[in-house]
Amino acid sequence: MISFDLAITILITTVTALIILSILYGRSKGALYMAIPTPHLKAIIAQGHLTSSMLVYDLGAGYGRIMFEASKSGATVVGYEFDYAKTLYIKNKIKKDKITNATIIQADLHSADFSK
Image 1 (cartoon, rainbow, N blue to C red):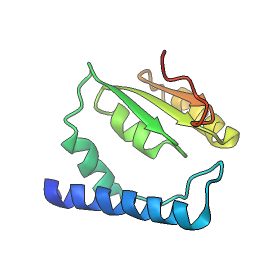
Image 2 (image 1 turned 30 degrees about the vertical axis):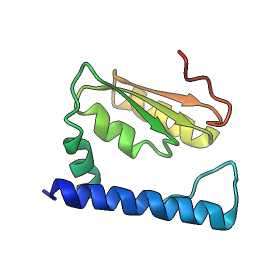
Image 3 (image 1 turned 135 degrees about the vertical axis):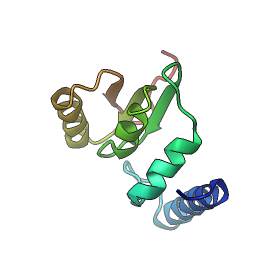
């Protein structure tokens, strides 16, 4: 298991890289994809100490890796994804794997209604 400091460093580095790349390439409908290695993803989720009483949002859910890992903790997970095909993939996986605490919403984050 990686340390908390390393997990935070990885997260900050990833976010910084995404911001820089976003600025360099301009605003578009989709975000750049940067894979988080599975051990790092599991460590980041573990550091959140998620419980069944928590609600987790995954903005730009992609293929749902973060959603599915967070749902294992019992937390309620709501993912937002712009890409229709990715949304269908996640819906099918939720149904196939009988995941009861995860939902995916197909929406553009720039105009999504988060008040619900």
